[in-house]
Length: 441
Image (cartoon, rainbow, N blue to C red; front, side, top):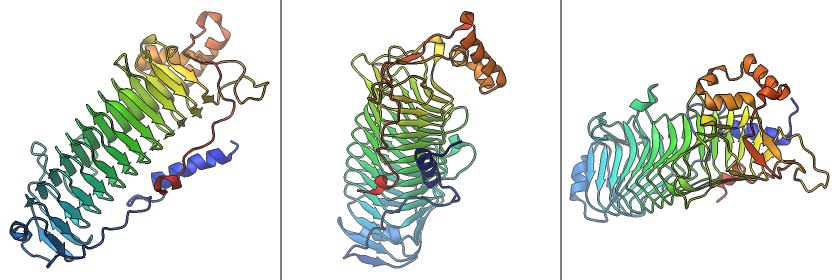
């Protein structure tokens, strides 16, 4: 196979952001640890930290020395708790730190352990209040990692959440959970070996420059509106980003890679509307983009623009035929099939315009970069798999190749048209995103 610069760049993205040769730490530059506050009360290792918190005045600053501190802790007033990474607050019951106050800052230290009760959502940090800040904190060996519950203007930045990594992903706790949280920022966090990064019933939040690995859902939206995900990397998860019953979402300049297995999806939508997905790299997933009844609202339109979808078994999978969907200026290369539609449907009511398809066999006589004849996708095996999902067991088998040959040479078995692009590109659009750009702010 001829190696092109574009191919080298794509493989480099997978290697760099997927952690080739490195299984224990993040591959991206880390945010600088939060500096020690200029003023603050020194807390020696092993001190009775809860008593000091109870005695502190609103707005006080407590600075931890390296060492071990016993939890669980409860904070019910505005204050700042700072420590270096080797200042460790640990607990084996309840949530290790519970905040129920406004204007609390937790900076730099490590949280280790928690209770293990799912019904009580026990975890490392449980936060409720307004104008909360968690920066540079490491959470490990906790059931849930960082829970932001009913907050406004929370800021999570540069934290690391390391989950239990047990094989049964449903028995892990969520690494980061936003619940009924608004106008908040989650940025430059590292999450791995957890269950999900959840955004439920939460609106107008920004998630940027985060990395999620070896988890179930890289980010899972439900009933959450007006959120943005940008410049983030989702690698080796079961699903990269999935949005359910949500609207007005923007996903841009993200890497969604290596979501494998039968349920492996790079990007998934269910009854989600006014979604804009642009300039994303969607690589080496079982299904690149999965769409189920999206958009549902007749006033909504979903737009997929300038995304690169490569190395997937299916680039775009529609649960059934959808409308009000624009697929423009994307690159579809090295995929098993461009589109698959369940229930015997097609994608003819979607607007495909100016995309690049490596299987296009047309020509460009006027040299404008657009094909002079439309691109049409017809494949009998893909059509049959859409109608009879159980045939997916034979995906890639020689028998299915023979089915495609029959569809091409025998008029009786000619497959129907699944999509049409009237003016496909004959060369891919220029790349608009690089790994370095994710950290160039």
